[in-house]
Length: 191
Image (cartoon, rainbow, N blue to C red; front, side, top):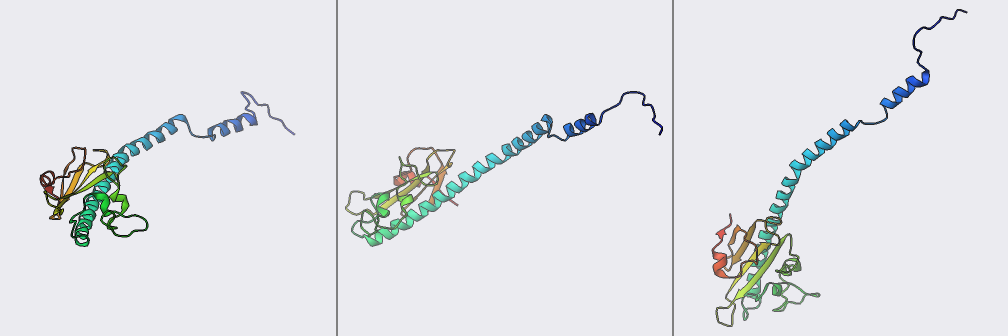
């Protein structure tokens, strides 16, 4: 048997395997930082679009809520002709069990009927409906309005409707929803 003499450095088998294992142990710090940076860039693009979509959904819900209030006011006028239109928004709502009466007409979902100023609202908006009697015993007109609970966050537009049934809107100034004919008539008719 011939043994050959090895000259130079000799690497042990454990040193070679240890080096190979070290390289397969995980990601480097730079690789992890690159992944985090990519995730942050995607989030920076997506979050503003998500917020805009949510505000658009809130505004659409508020417009639909005003249309529902308008329909409920017309039905209330037909159901209680000696009163005319409902005195306040809560009169259009319901109690359990729901028996139609002038103070709970069972015409509107309570989520909207109770979303008045000072409450948490409904889909980021607060609502108000007021019957107007102009000095007579009969409420011959009404104003229904909606404004964002948090302007520029839950919505950017106010909505209102009067007896003519046209939906009106304008950029919000915050505060209480419109509750007079003059305030609502100042709004442009929504497209």
